[in-house]
Image 1 (cartoon, helix red, strand yellow):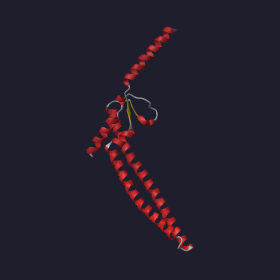
Image 2: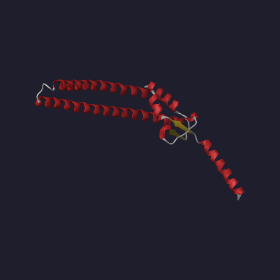
Image 3: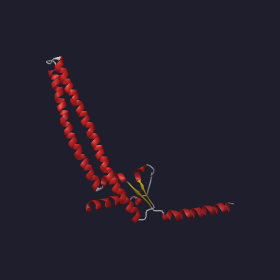
Length: 172
């Protein structure tokens, strides 16, 4: 019985090692590739510029609100209740407009970021698929997917992915 178990263990080890030798695994950090590729950096710049423009626009509206509130506070003792109510009504409307504009700006930035990110990730996935096919990888896993706790850095394909993505971007 011991000999049979020992023999089966030996056979399983041989099969396992033969299988392991034919499996080629790669790991990639898509977030890093997204952030460090030329196209990803350009997208980040575009989003930042758009955010800055929106922020300047919102800052101007905020200053108008502050000015109106200051006027109301300074003049409130000299105004009738009707005039105060009217000024307060105008202030509340401008405040709602500001809040709506702020919310719209945030949504627009998030939408633009998601759109650009999706486009870049799709392109990176195609490049990664080509790397996998060309280099005969059995499987390529995403580093940040939550299931990988350790891997040998020699199987990290992130640099290769970034390099190939940058080469394609340069060709365009």
